[in-house]
Amino acid sequence: MRLGIALAAIAALGGCVARPGASDALIAVKIIAFNDFHGNLEPPRQAIDAPGPGAMMIKVPAGGAAHLASAIAALRAKNPNALVVSAGDMTGASPLVSSYFLDEPTVAAMNLIGLDLNAAGNHEFDRGSVELLRLQNGGCDPAVPAQCRVEPFAGAKFAYLAANTMMASGTSLLPGTAIRTLGSGARSVKIGFIGLTTRTTGILVSPSGIPGISFADEAATANALVPKLRAEGADAIVVLIHEGGDTKGGYDDKGCPGLSGAIRPILDALDPAIDLVVSGHTHKAYVCDYGRYDAARPILLTSAGNAGRLITDITLRIDPRTRRVVGKSADNVIVQGEGYTLGETTVTTTDRYPRFAADPTVKALVDRYAAEVEKVRVRPAGRLTAIPAFTSGAMRETELGNMIADAQLAATRKDGAQIAFMNPTGVRASLTPDARGSVSYGAIYAVQPFGNVLMVRRYTGAQIRAVLEQQFDKTGGPMRLQVAGMRYSFDRSRPAGQRIIAPTVDGQPLRADASYTVTISNFLAFGGDGFSAFSAGSDVAGGISDLEALEAYLSRGAPVTPPTADRTTDVTPPAGR
Image 1 (cartoon, rainbow, N blue to C red):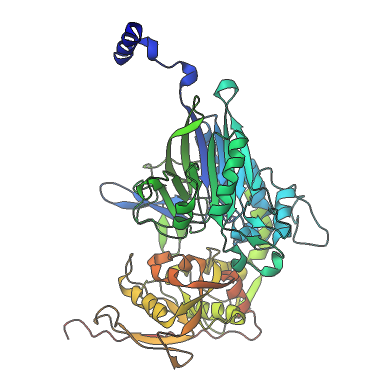
Image 2 (cartoon, rainbow, N blue to C red):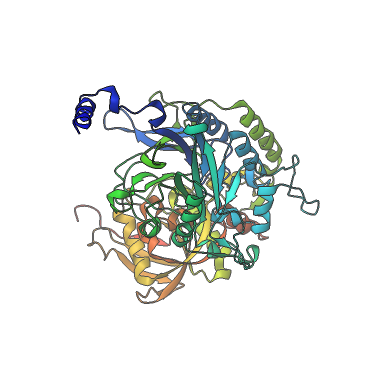
C-alpha cells in the first residue's frame, strides 16, 4: 500500500513512473474529404466568401481539379496516415468538359489525385445503374459512341460505396462498407467506412435507369453495419453520406449555428458508435460537433460545399490501448487556385489564404479533354429573333430570366409542372445571337454555367405565397424570382404576409389550400439564395439539367421570340407618398 501511495505521489508530480511510453501516444489519422464535385475539372469561376481584414469579407477564387490535386497533396504531406474520401455526386450534372465524355475524365482525374472512396450520390445514377458500374469497372462499348471518345477508359481505382442502394435480390448494388488500415505494427489502426446514398434518389433520377433498385433508410442501414465493422477490427467508424443540411455560419464556423435539413433526423437516429459523418447533397459547407445538439451523439459532421472549392481537413485521434477515437477536429480549407473575370466581376487571388499551384499531371489531363470539347462549344444550340434583355440585379425582372423560366417549365410539363421559378443570380451572362439569329452551345453554357438540375416539387398555394413573400425579407437581401406560369403584383410597403397582390396561375387565382406543381433548380430546392421557404415542398420528379432545358427550348424549330418582362409588377408607392 505504501509503495502504491508513493508511486501515485510521484505520478502527480510528473515523475517518469506513470508517464506513458511512445507506443501509448495517440495515433492521429487524417481524413481529407470533399463532396458534390460534379465534374468541375476546370476552375468553375466561383469564389468562397471568407474573412478578410478587420470585419470585411473577401471573395477567394477557388476550385479546379489541378488545384484540388495540389491542395490534397499538401494535406497528405502533413500526415502519412491519410485517406481521401468523397460524399457523392462526384459526377453528374457536370460541365461540358466532363459530361460530354460521360464523366470519364473526372474519374481519371480522381485516380491521379488518389481518391480512396466515394459514396455514390443521386447524380451518380443520372445515367442509370449500368453506367455507374462502368465508371467503377471501366470498359468501352462500341455500340455507345459517347464512351471512350478520347482514350480507353479503365474505370475507377477508388471504390464506390452504396450500402442502402438495394437490388431486388436484397443485396446492395455496390459494396456498402470498406476498411482501410493506416500505420504499421502496433501503431496501425483500422478505419471502417459506410457509404450511403440519399433515400430520395429514387424520385430524383429516371426510374428506367434503376430498375428493381430501392433506397433504404440511411440511419437504419448504417446502424446495422456498425457491428460488422467492429467485428472486422475497425477502430473508428466513418459514414460517407450523400445527404446534408445547412447552418447559419460561415464555411468554417465551428459553432454550427442553426443546423437544419434532412441530415438532422438521420443523425438523431445514428448509433453513437459512429465517430464521423462526411455529408453532401445540399452544396453547403459546415463543420459541426453534433454533441451540441445531442449530447448522446458527439458525432463530428462535415461538408465541403461543392465543385471542389473546399476540402475538409479532418483529424481523428485514436487511443492505441482502447482502440477508440478520443479526439476529433476539422477545418474547411479553401482550394485557392486562379483569379477570374465573369461578366463585370473580377476576383483575384489573395495572400491571406494559401494558394495551390496547378498539378501538372492533372492539368495535362484536363487540357486534353478541354481541347477535344472545344468543337462542341461552338456548335449551334438554337435560334432567337432578338436579344433577350438582361441587366443583372437582384430585384430586376428580365426577358432572359423569364425565357429561362419558360424553358424549364416546358421541359417539365410532362411531369405536371404548372409554374417555374428561376433565381436571377443563376443567370450569369447575356445571350446574344449572331447575325443569323443562331446561338452557340458555349453561349448558352455561359448563361447557365452551374450545371443545376431541375426538380419538380409540389407546394400548396399558401407555401407558394410564403416563397413570394420571402423575396423581400429573406436572409441575404431582397431578390425577385423570374417566373413562368403565373403573374402577380407586389407592394413592399404593406405588412409582411400581405405584400403579394392578386397572384394567378394560368389565369386563375392562386388558392391557399390548392396544390400546385412547381419546377425549380436543385439549388433553390435546398434553400439557395436564402429561399428557405422552398424546403417546405415535396418531391414529385427529377428533371434534366437547366442547360439541357434551355437548349431544347431554343432548338424547337422556328426562332424563339424572347418574352416580355411584365409578369411581376411593382406597385409600391414612391417614398414620401
